[in-house]
Image (tube, rainbow, N blue to C red):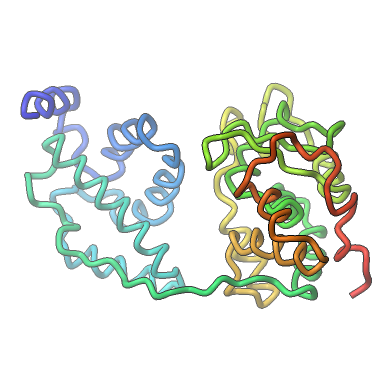
Length: 294
């Protein structure tokens, strides 16, 4: 282990990367890109939350009290305890890697002893029929790609990662399917597309040379962050307690209320994979709740 650490330390000159931003760019991000599927979350947290406070600071000059104040400032800005804790976890990971490379003395992380917030049980929140319709109408008025992505979340019950990482090659409009080659279960699954979801996809521009339905800032990367847009929309509608994942719950509840069995809903949500893809959606071609007048 000592030899392994020495090899890592010799690969990077500590004198070149003493400051937070420089270390993250030169060492931390290349490290997590090889090891974490969710490395883009770390990049966003470092850019949006850590860099404004500590970017120009030397890592060995940051003190625990400053980290504690920063964490409480995030909470004062309205971030949930879970979100604050994710930010702190990234900070701790950066500091751990900095100690491995000799940028911080062993055992001298400024995050040491900083306690995460306690997470209280949060009930699942589902939109009622009127709320779901209001949200859909608000999203339809926006031309932003984030709006289209959120509409698909509500229309399909898909996970956020399944929509944001969707590729054009996996869209089968002829079969009314979005194919997820590798789902959370480790197996492929098929997301049924109703007419409303198909209309959203057909209205989306296809960027030449880009495989993603939702291109990111870099053409070879998908859109990774829809939180800021979502937060603005939900606040404008008075739905501040609704999370992105709650749209998946809402999709399920709307189907159950329409008379479909839990078994059918489980299959559509991907908690069970059918032997054959459901080419014709089992509840018809339209979302009934969008067909009625509020």
